[in-house]
Image (tube, rainbow, N blue to C red):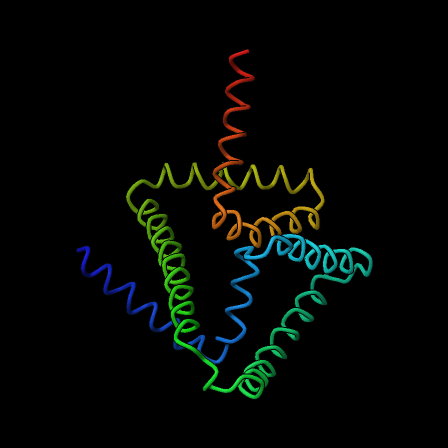
Length: 194
C-alpha cells in the first residue's frame, strides 16, 4: 500500500512538473518569496495584498467587475509570461541546482494537492458512512460562517483569509506557526489556571 502511495505521489509530481514547465523561471522566485528567504518578504506580501485590497475598497467595484478583472489579468499573464520568460532566460541558463529546487517545489505542491484530495474523499466517505456526523458538522460550520459573515465586513474577512493563505508557507517553513500556536495555547491554559 505504501509503495502504491509513493508511486501515486511520484506520478502526480511528474504531471505537475510537466504542466509547470513554461513557468519554471517564475516559480523559483515566487517560492522564495512565499518561504520568506529574505527578511523583508513578509512585508512585501502584506504590502502587495494591502495595496490591492485598498484599491478594491476605494473603487468599490461590483463582484462581476472584480471577477472579470481578475480573470482578464490571469488570462493576460497566462498568455504573456511563458514567451517572455523563454525569451529572457534561455534554456542553457537552467542549472541542475534550479532543477533540483523545482523538483522539491513540485513534490511539496503535489503532497499538498494529494492531501486536499484525500480530505475531500474522507468527507465524501463520512457523508456516505456517517451522514448524521457529516451533516451536523457541515451545518455547524456553515452557521458559524454565517454568523461571522454577518458580523464582520466581507472585504476584511477576505483580506485576512488571503494574507493568512499567503503567509502560511513562510510561517510553516520558518517554524513560526508552531511557536505562535504554542504561545496561544500556553496563554489560554495559563489564563484558565489562574
